[in-house]
Image 1 (cartoon, helix red, strand yellow):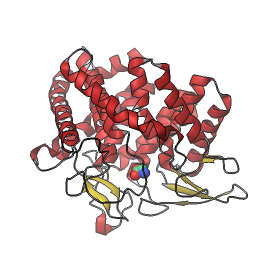
Image 2 (cartoon, protein in one colour; image 1 turned 120 degrees about the vertical axis):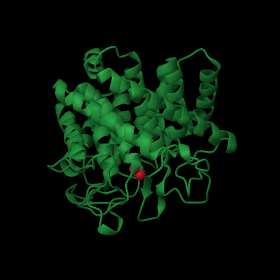
Image 3 (tube, helix red, strand yellow; image 1 turned 30 degrees about the horizontal axis):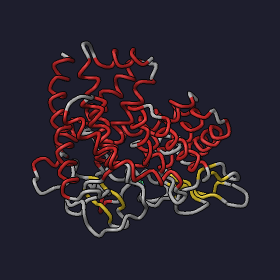
Length: 391
Ligand code: GLY
């Protein structure tokens, strides 16, 4: 029965994966060496502002995922390897970028994946340097990595980036770096993750005393609301932090966020852009948050001791992917440049609202690749095999 169900998923996911390859090929042939962020009416190239410069890893990151899926040896995989290197290389100077808090997004999707394929120490060095640069954002008084907007501000999004500091610490055996990463996670769970597992987007501190002042937001509805993408950054980011630190507090936080997601998201698995959105835009969803949740749950389910709960996270991820493949894929709209419709970047600034967004494309591809790898090799109920192979 289980195998029968997953057989049809496999076909659905493989077809979506092929569509992602087709759209990326079309994009890079139409606009060579262009790094997109969000579409406007389905078109990647436009004059809309970026707000901040954090998305350049996602396009080459998708290419590395294509390579991983295809394996080595055939012409298609050689093509994607060539493109992935071509689009990753120009990002190297960003390893010293002090203007953004997004170096995990940029380098985990690219140089980290590249290194895992080649084991070339020079490539690993780039990831390590990015981790060292990110750690320079640490504010000692408040015990957090500051966001790009101001010295007194912390974002939930930074949980997706702190992993690169853990990585640099582990690879160089640098205890100070590890300590910075751990302290940032503790501060984030203390002030941005609420008792019910919901999250605030931003926190504001007193710079002189380091005292936490209030929850706030940039992209969510309000300081006391739960912006859905922030929740999924937290779910995924605390899972990564647990993988590096094995600190059970981070696993509990990831589970709390996952449980909030599951209990508050409509039955199809795609959340509203903000769980507390006002009536005038309550029906607006964010498919990118759903893609991040699917990718995060596929990682989180590996670490859950209770097999029933682990299976529940796995099957929730599969359910989300089914919905994305069925209701959000742009495949039937020939004029649309992206893979997934229904993403939201910044509602208040009217950027990328109900559009394709690069991080949605990337985490959707990551989740598809992960699910397909498990389904491809599974000869029994996938989660049992999945969990056993990783315990
Ligand atoms: N700045 C990260 C995000 O838009 O989710």
